[in-house]
Image 1 (cartoon, one colour):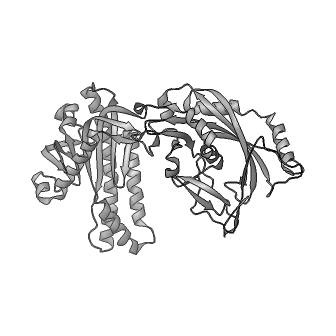
Image 2 (cartoon, rainbow, N blue to C red; image 1 turned 180 degrees about the vertical axis):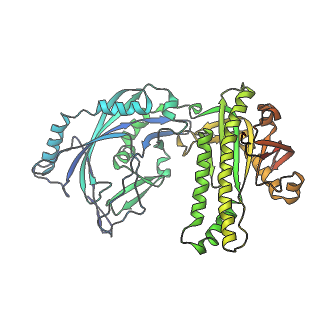
Image 3 (cartoon, rainbow, N blue to C red; image 1 turned 30 degrees about the vertical axis):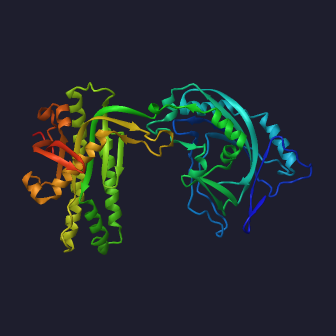
Length: 475
């Protein structure tokens, strides 16, 4: 045990080969013995070496003593994939250290975690061919979720041998909930230490979340750390993303900031409800409904705007019919999205009229449509925090939207292009127009108004202005 200020640090680690006096007892005594079988997988990319970690649980930390608090409300920590088994407590409890270890050895004869751990690994990566046992150890420490309870953990380490596609391991679309934590010279730079009063031990943080102590133990041990790096699977750059050809969309809610300010100010005076939060939630739901209805999986949302893509091929050979079909599907979903914005508008205007306040802002929408080649995946390779977009055409669709914004917000230009009275406007690049066969392939809800030059920063591009019109109901 070690001292940290006035608090005793409750953490002790020892190996299988450790010898103890027959009368030596635990201090404090564990109330529970847990066997944990862990799966260790390491990878390398062109930037370094990483350990595969997960954060699969949401365990709120129970703090019995109000004086002992975690620095932040926590429900998660980093660990390697694992399975566990809690042993029944002997009738006499866990007396001496030696009798407890003898009990563990007896229990290990009845539990072989390898088959279940292999199934777990196969579920993630479809290709765990073997699990090699590695020297394990014991940890005496406070339970994560119940810090008032001291437990003894027997860590059974297994090193995975994989025979799977490297993209299965890289997880370019972030489908598996895995992360890669640097374990090379960057480990010290990307982690930090803190003393946690609730758990009464020093914890290591990665991305502001604690790392399990058993994981830190193997990374920070010179011999174990060297072995981890030696077994790493080499992942090449191109397995972290894919290149596509498809339709690109960049959208924004016009007047969103002003509407939120109005809801937080004028509407708050008449109700205890947080109308600003309701408005923000409504916008988030509207975006979500749009992407679900359009079948979009590749998306990036930032506040009141988004970029999304509909991939059509991994080559440039895409028929105009395929492009038009995808555009029709997105447009139909987008018109529903516009309807939801108009409902919010009606609520804002109704409030303004009913309460004789100043005129409420009007929500509108801007949409830029582009077509071309782009990349989607983990652009920073293993260390990537999120899956995202990259490529010249991604920048272009954003610039087209910004160019449309400039026209919409400049009264002289808005009147010149006949969009000054329109709440919802769109712009399609020349590349997009050609891809769906120019005007012939336009959805019936997209009405051509004319051409314009989108200018934003260093970007200049030719585009077509479009008016959005709800589809006519069949009589």
